[in-house]
Amino acid sequence: MKLELGYIDIKGIRFDDYNAIEDGVLVVDPDELVKPVLEDELIKSAHFEIATPGESIRITPVKDVIEPRVKVEGPGEIFPGMIAKVDTVGSGRTHVMRGMAVVTAGPIVGFQEGIIDMTGPGADYTPFSQLHNLVLVMEMEDSGASAHEYEKAARMAGLATAVRVGELARELEPDEIEVFETPTIAQSYSDELKDLPRVAYVMMLQSQGLLHDTYVYGVDVKRTLTTMLSATEVMDGAIVSGNCVSACDKNTTYHHLNNPVIQDLFKQHGKTLNFVGTIITNENVYLADKLRSSDWTAKLAGFLSLDAAIVSQEGFGNPDTDLILNCKKLEAQGIKTVIITDEYAGQDGKSQSLADADPAADAVVTGGNANQPIVLPPMDCVIGTLDYVDKIAGGHDGSLRPDGSIEAELQVITGATNEMGFNRLSAR
Amino acid sequence: MSKKAYIVVTNNPLVKEQLDETVGVCYFSEDSHRDLLERVRDFVHKGYRILTHPLAGSVKPWETPYRSVMITAKREEKTDLFSLEMIEQAIFALEKSKARPVTLNEKVLADFQIVDFSLIQSALPSAEAHGQH
Image (cartoon, rainbow over all chains, first blue to last red; front, side, top):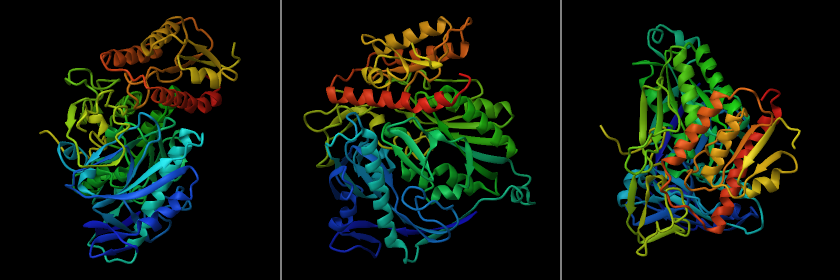
């Protein structure tokens, strides 16, 4: 499957009474853009705000981060099965509004989390501080609807807004074009590739119910078997986040669209390795599901005759068991396996990092210790509300100090210990 | 007693309220999160097997006082070592964070009940579909 990504660089966002992209600046009419959001009767109020890199702004509680894209050639539309009709995406050409994101913010449950600081020490820990953010702040109607329904309303509003914004890039000439092509099985044995190690990416997706779900082509991943897709499908929004919790190590929709493991495997494809496929698998609560899904991961890896695999996790806790099961079963087939995870090693970093472990997991990349304490200084402006800061994961009663600063753990920062390795900080 | 092949051991009042009529629920209202996990370990020692992972997914164990674990309804003669390893790991994970503050805000507690219920609810279709637990 061959996909061209045409990047339209966005250098700023401003409000006006029309929608356009002018000299790299996104111009939006916030009143017009918010109208379809408010058509959902579960959403009581909604408005847009702009957050620019370097500004003294704190966005919280963040639900999702979404990069606007539009398909300009080839079958399907962005976010198939969610916003668009189901059709196989991942080929043709897609325009990407690079350098910006639609961020959804607003409370869904009382301990929800997610902070993006646009400046200061917190900004170093989130990649989204470097983006021009169009923030959709929503408040839900107190109508007795379930938290599930609120999550869905917020998720759909964010995705639909990103699609409407992405549409503005349809007719523009990209600043840069990148081409990604996945091989068929037969092509993976071509003369140029056959002597390189056969490597696949195993992407684990959160799938545990309210606040922990992921959707592939509109299907709730907990109801699926481990399967394969083309890495280019992910770039067209085949996978979207329905995940609200664990800000530091949830994969937002932005992470899926810009998956760094996929990007790096493409960069090395045909040079140091042969990127033969992408396997997606779930992280269910039910133990038999964990055993079955990891069996299928190993089985599909066997079908692909892999030499090596890279496994990325999402979240922590019982998904650690899925991670270790996948690793053990791949290694048992002689497939060299690297896992990407993060750590909950206590504030001093001395406790066992994962809830599960095995000697087969001898090649581990960590996104960092989510328990690491951090003090976030007050910001001039808060987009959203600080009401939830005391309750968010990693925060605690007393996290919010009288001066507006926050004493918490890295867990509170959206994307801080991302397990795809999207992080901006590293130790060498 | 439930006619299902599984029961839910919980300290979450919402799980009792929602599942008691359709699924067997062993409800221990006074149990802390840790008490509940130790109780599940007792069940495992007696020959019951764990059917859902005893750790929450991405909700910090020290944050929530609620836990629900699905186990087999029928006791077997031997202790299942896989179940035992799971529950011991979960207790260990909770133990390492025992010094954490616990949230007591009513609204937050209600939401923790919903999320714990949602986790166990997500396992029900799998449990129903399984012939052999």
